[in-house]
Amino acid sequence: MPPPNDLPVPGTDEQSVSAALTERLRDEIEASGGAIDFARFMERALYEPGLGYYSGGRRKFGAAGDFVTAPEMGSLFADCLARPCAQILQATNGDILEAGAGSGVLAADLLLALEKLGTLPANYFILELSAELRARQRETLGRKAPHLVARVRWLDALPAKGFRGVALGNELLDAMPVERFRMTAWGLKQLQVGWTNNRFADGNEARAAGQGWPVCGFVWHERTADRTVQERMGPICLPEGYISEIGFQAEAWVHSIADMLEQGVLLLIDYGFPRAEFYHAQRRAGTLMCHYRQRAHDDPLILVGLQDITAHVDFSAIAHAGQEAGLDLLGYTSQAAFLLDNGLEEIIAASDPNDVRAHLALTSQIKKLTLPHEMGELFKVIALARGIGAPLAGFRQQDRRARL
Ligand SMILES: C[S@@+](CC[C@H](N)C(=O)[O-])C[C@H]1O[C@@H](n2cnc3c(N)ncnc32)[C@H](O)[C@@H]1O
Image (tube, rainbow, N blue to C red; front, side):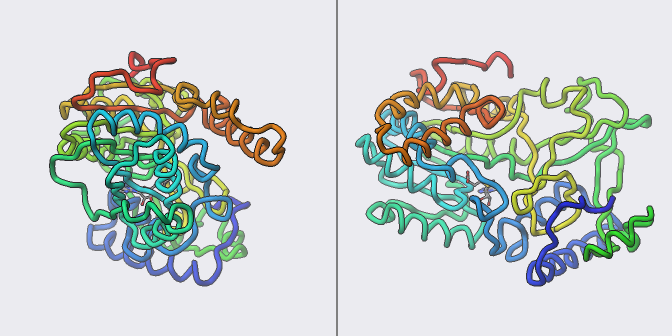
């Protein structure tokens, strides 16, 4: 398939980074007999040290990057999130652990909000895979909350045991590698990635070359699906040609959190659905999306290492993984309901309408975070807990656990 017409062509520096990563992936494909599973391809495209999308030096977050997340829009998201965090910190006398902290803006704003509430944790741990992002997080925290930086500690891996407090991830699970499958007349196939020297044999070669795109490139392969994929999709009736994803790595990650959590809550915010909606017959092409310089498209095999690759979250799988690992499902709701239950209206009421600029900025954040056609409905919040009896702020207005 040719690259979508309207995607910007990367500059020379970017092209050489992508070429180096492409070379490494080709070597692995060759060494594996011609194809690797998609999850492996996605893992290296995003996290290959120094070259992967999240491990490389390009700016990703915010208006100058490839996408804008809720904490990047302003402090409102963190101000609301601070309330359940404060509740858990008080109940556990614990810490916060944020996984995949992006630019570090949520860590800074959340610490500032918790300071105002008088519930600062002794430690704010950040688990970040990318060295470049760690440096950026340090810079953001130093600029926005210099007096609180001493509380922040970077981790290379999750603590093995004994964590008390809040484990937090915003748009984390959607960045974890997924397996892809396709339903065919001959059964379920698992999608793999191979290499071809003539990617545009369908006649689009001239157009691709004219746009500066290489003619050779990665292509889709298929193999019989693993038993784990067959078992997961077995109970769901899928039409022929149906393509989708399974986030096994996200589920394994929830298990690791459960292992380390002695008392507290795992709070995850992301875009996704319960399983019945995720594998809805009409969602025939799955949920995989790529972002490059604020443009969204669906071809993960181009712009390797330069674009974000993401898939929606199957929240039923996340809830099940947590419960299987001994956690309680404390809450599941939409982002809009979660924020409204966490003081959004009070924050609006406290803002000064005469400060027109600040008021307009706040109104714009509220719209983006809560309107159903923006992030309000697609984004969900799930809370999995150990040793927390009381209902958690954020889940009192709308309890959607029964849908999972
Ligand atoms: C889409 S970004 C979201 C960043 C940030 N939370 C935000 O909301 O702006 C995904 C982040 O998750 C990180 N990530 C992915 N898998 C991870 C893992 N297993 N442990 C820790 N961080 C991870 C990536 O490096 C990246 O920083």
